[in-house]
Image (cartoon, rainbow, N blue to C red; front, side):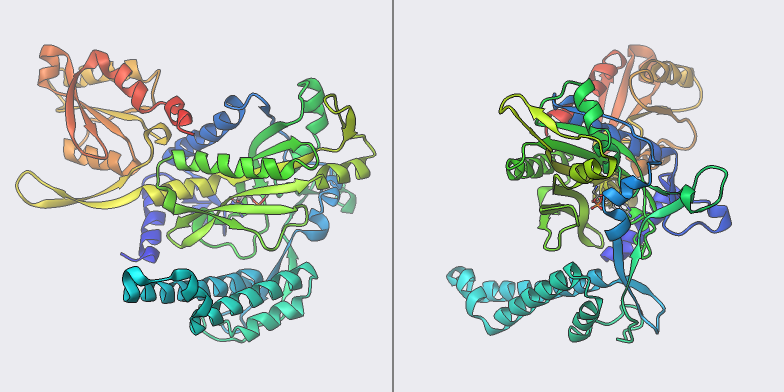
Length: 516
Ligand code: GAP
């Protein structure tokens, strides 16, 4: 199965099993807007909680807030979003498809990198143990040529975007002979900048003065509240403020399912530090955030850091944590050193003092900020992509069956355990209900009695339920039940009275948090 096929299956599976639906689907949907179904909302809540507890419970110096989506319009002038939050877009005249010009160039560079790595791999195989990779990279004419062309194009792009030189960006696309992936032609329009903020009106008078923006990032709600939290919480630098909430962007090029949406959720943390100490904390948070990802257990080789060459208008250093989605390595989280850009600008535009008096060094200053910013929806897609598996399952009669299983970490799974009576008679349903009614106070449980046990297992494999409990005739005799494990499909007989204790250990968020 190709990665493209896998991704299509994942989208269909998400819908079929109540994870993600296209928004207002009965009206043919709304582009790049999605709704979460009965299983999706549980997974999303669990992911949100995993992040929230990791930030606010495990760090004594991080507290949370929940700021409003609507903010005073000057917020967005001060933050630079009115002036600089735009994408350079280019259209292909033949396919009528629109692209982000910088993404087209980045994808071109990625292809060159892949070619380069293939050359290195070929040579490694050819020379075996005698292979000197460093020397090969420095001297092989093809590798040197590819390296130089990537470096040159990258430098040109960064400079052109910094200077807002859109003609030069287009020239790079022409020089690299980049074609539209749909039409295959190089028939491009000029490049134009599009602001990404969504506008709405508030109040009764429909004029300019009432135009406000739906926040394009949650971070500004933290910045404008920083002094409130610092004073009321008597916070001492370094300290952090965490927030989870909706953000809105008029993404023109919105593709790849819930990867790029117009309405999405961010989980952001701003960490306020002494000026000049920001790089130390930037490194600290890069490592710490990677550990949070790693604890989910999808394999460290699925992640990598990508250092930004072109920095956002507020940053002096930035790296992404990229995950290998079915459509390649892509950003799931950003770690940004935002200097004092936001607080200094809010101080300027509001006229309110946003300085902090540092009792340890007896100085007042505007703190510098390290931000960790992760998309909740993108993390959701990460989990689904990593967890989805199709497997052949041997049957007792020697034939084989297929199953789709979501290997979601148990602590994050939408349903933790399903309780089944083996048959719908002989008092088994009543017994199964009793067990379920007892366990539901501690765990997200589901009771199922319809269809064969095999079909019930498949349904729960498909939504990632880690444990299925079956009540059978032996249960009536000795009060034992079987636990069937999603990943190994093995079964174990245990006393029903031990279920809570066994489950507690296996599905505990605390245990996941301990692994960070
Ligand atoms: N406050 C900084 C900030 O907003 P960003 O890199 O623009 O930085 C941070 O966004 C994260 O938010 C991204 O890494 C991504 O996970 C998520 N994100 C951004 N735009 C998104 C979109 N259109 N749809 C879904 N998630 C998005």
